[in-house]
Amino acid sequence: MFVAGAFGLHLSEASLFGTGMLPPDTHGKLAFVGNSSLEGAVRAVADPSTLERAADLARGARSVDLSLVPGFEEAFVREMAL
Image (cartoon, rainbow, N blue to C red; front, side, top):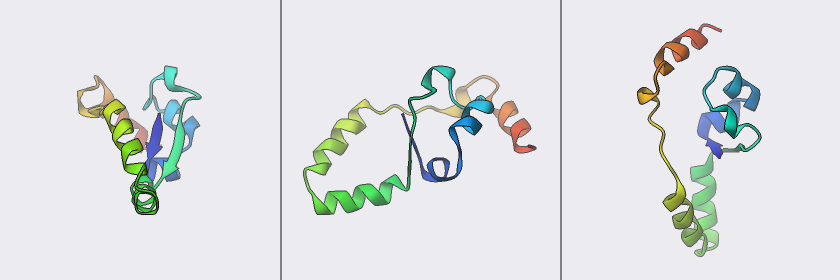
């Protein structure tokens, strides 16, 4: 599982699991990648075959709508006070 953007740059694995933001079964399976959109653009320009790899990854990606996770909003607001 990739953690990108501000999450990938500023949060630790311990923080993500400590707040319950990620399910326990993903522990040890995270890759923090920072600004992945910029890195991807640079790689696509440097090596066009990267686009096919990106398409493969996109086909396997899934989106998680946190607003549909029971209790997420309450937990998020509560943990913001930390």
